[in-house]
Length: 448
Figure 1 (cartoon, one colour):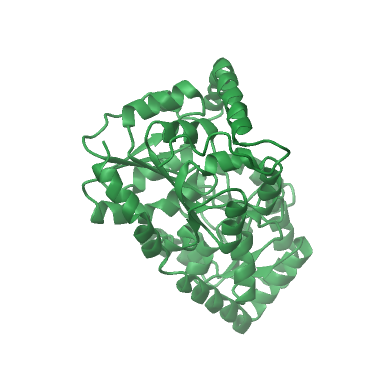
Figure 2 (cartoon, helix red, strand yellow):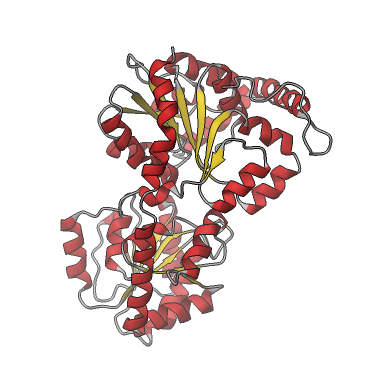
């Protein structure tokens, strides 16, 4: 492995900036990062005040360990947030079963992902918050945990974290590598900078053929595409008792779900509900905001439109008069997907980039999405081509699509079956990832 992350002084296309120039840029970034440490501390204090950081574990963000390091070789897995962290759980379970000699450290950067990992990580796996990208914080983290192997997910290209890990002797592998078309265009304008980081990885596994092409164009050498690691995750679970209670409360009412919605999409959901309820007596709309801390504002906006709202976090029951059931809890998406056969996946009618389309597909839902799916562009295109997904461009098209699926059971069942078939066809990605990791895992066992 090249701890220098690339040959000294080599030249690349990109405005005349070569590898040596890239290192000068990153050197400046490191110096500025050290000088900016007081500003970062202030930012984290504000995040604590807003509930975006865990005050009892804030030291971990500066590399201070919250736990003792176990004896023996350690593999570090890093994911930014909930979706990426969940995608690692099948791999972590597999490594615990097949490589018990390895200690597993999982890092992520959000409070919600930390809570989920506390509940779902298997015995023997540790969670810590990832350090902020300051030299002292990263070095403190590395000095304590001394990972032999680091597995980073998707597009976590933090310069100090990557370069200092490689320099400290940690072999790095990029899993489910993702570079959106917009990011690809941006990085190409400074290609040596991203190439310098990509050369720190001994192996790059891309999420899709398009991501593979982008990563190779930006400088990834040892790279291939085993498939989307998120396809390896099991279908989202649901508490059986809660599912039975909710089904009884809903009864025979027609129901649809607006899932993982963002600001602006809840109002669209309310508009769709009002329009369709005239044709579908007793219609119930399940609405799951991506960020539950927005629930009060969402409820207010819906009620201002004359809609009756019951709220999950307040233990409010679904009554016959309830128009919208506001499911503002974490970790219960499996419930809502099982209750509604028709699902609109949010973050896609507003320019957010969309969310994981495979989650509703695995549960045989009829899936709709808006046009903003840059986070899952290849997956969305493939699912549309397979008849497993439908696009809607705006509120009017969403109303028409939901109405059609509620009215035409044959059409709904055909779309649902195609989605489930597509999700099932993605099986095998975990086997390919584990096989590709085997040499690096072997080296982790023997590396001092």
